[in-house]
Image 1 (cartoon, rainbow over the protein chains, first blue to last red):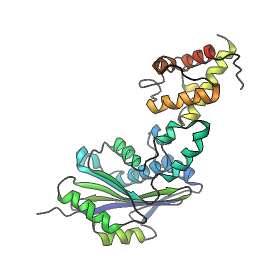
Image 2 (cartoon, rainbow over the protein chains, first blue to last red; image 1 turned 180 degrees about the vertical axis):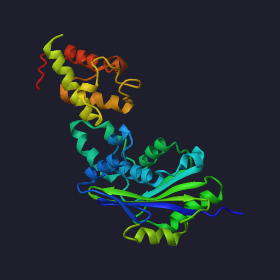
Image 3 (cartoon, one colour; image 1 turned 30 degrees about the vertical axis):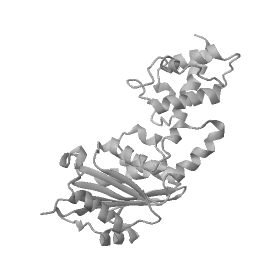
Amino acid sequence: MQPVPNISAYCLISPNKIFLDGQIIFEHPGSAGIFLDKTYDHLDFPYPKFYKMDNLCKLGFLAVEILLKGRSHEKKYSDSETGLVLSNSHASLDVDLKYSKTIHSGASPALFVYTLPNIVIGEISIRHHFKGENAFFVFKHFDGNFMAEYVSGLIENKLIKSCICGWVDILKEDYRAILFLVETGGGENKLPFNADNLNKLNESEHG
Amino acid sequence: MSLNMDKLMYKLKEQIIERLHLKDLKPENIGDDQPLFVEGIGLDSIDALELIVLLQQEYNIKLSNAEDGPRVFHSVRTIADYITANSGALKVTT
């Protein structure tokens, strides 16, 4: 019998607000950079490398941190059993533009290393020791149909048992992340993992 | 130790913290002879590249031989020594 994947939790980060499972858990005024750094302070865990990340990485990194907080995820799954499938519309343009400004005055290696969107997957994987299947797609809009089909395929083919998937996008002050924790186990308060639910949650103002 | 050397090392610590986004550190937290990489401050290879750019931009010094990197960037003092040895009339402003 094929395992049935569910959405165990979902996290939405939109300008100056964070929602977990539809409930607001944090808000703070200020620019994207200030808001992301304040969110890190609020979560109160030591990870000095956070400050080196570009804003796309910070956004995805924090969303995953919130999604997994208190879930003992790493105890439930081995390193290779959790996948990461992310998407956005601006790729790494936010940091690409910052990097391009440094080229004539001495290109910054620290910015250059973030000029690919899938670096956010690397930062999350390093933090949580994930070694499962991963991919980063660039679409014009969030595509729940594609996401549901792709992740379900990974699970049905027994490549992974859980997955963090969704949308992580930022360009200057316009940012939005909605990430879903997908697991094959049962439990309370879970939604079936399918395109309808992904699209519905994505279109909901509060996730 | 000369006053100029002390000022240069303090300035270097400020620049390293700002340039490498070491927001959890203050200049006082970095020892003059503390290793900057791995077991010390914990800098990595990308940070090393950023330090090379820092030397070029702030002190107009190019690391002529890449193999010198580990020795030059061992600590704040070794960087300061390299700057002193490779700049004509170094003037440190605070």
